Length: 337
Image (cartoon, rainbow, N blue to C red):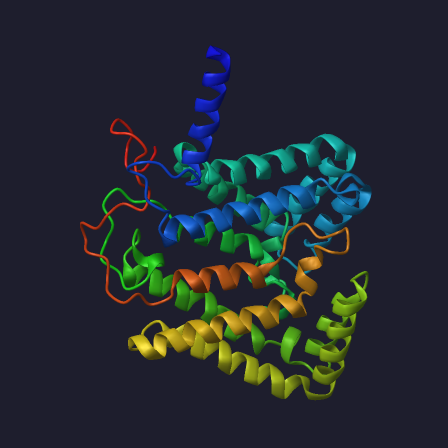
């Protein structure tokens, strides 16, 4: 009986950690905690994808090595070095990668390890952005909004910063500004979406047939319904590529400045950001997660999650507002850390 009681307490402790147990004194997770859990879910999806058979093959190291193409030597040489090591020790290295992502996802989901896991996710994301994504192609000239630039994994790091649980939150008109402050959060939003607008005007996206070809290439290996969508969108954009690239750049620029506008227009900007992120995700073929060779859902899904974090609230949170992580007992820290 004592063992069963101990097991029950352990299970309850875990469920309280992720905000899933209702008991006296418990309140539902606020929006920031829910966004943290959504981020944890994406990390867990990454871990599952990393366990695919393809990732244990030579093809994975070759895919990583391919990101070195077009980059300056200072960026490309370390990528080639790491790809060679992974090729020589594919099973061990890929298993390590998968378990790291699994640990990050579970760590974010479990309240006591939230800060540790978010910090680890930032460090891991920066490393993968270099060695796994070649800085998203922004230095090679191959990156564009429709193929994952400026690198999906850097958005993981950005989300970790913006969703960081603060003991004393700043007043902010949206969740993403509660830790960094609204002005810093707006600046980060402007840099991200503004860079996407700039990349949309580069030859990799604006050249004739570039945007359409980029999207059509994502159809390979996809389920028939998604392959059909990508082929049809790609065919249309092949005929109207340069003009549509300019339209895309304008839309991205509007999204970039929307967080500086009054609340009704800012909300419209967030809606536009989510719609644009959905288009990007479809253009990316959902990151290849249905092909057996995708390592993550790519940037579209993450951009949508980021946009939700910038949804304007009815009123700014007071500087001494309630912490987003509610204590489960009188002896626990409000932040669970």
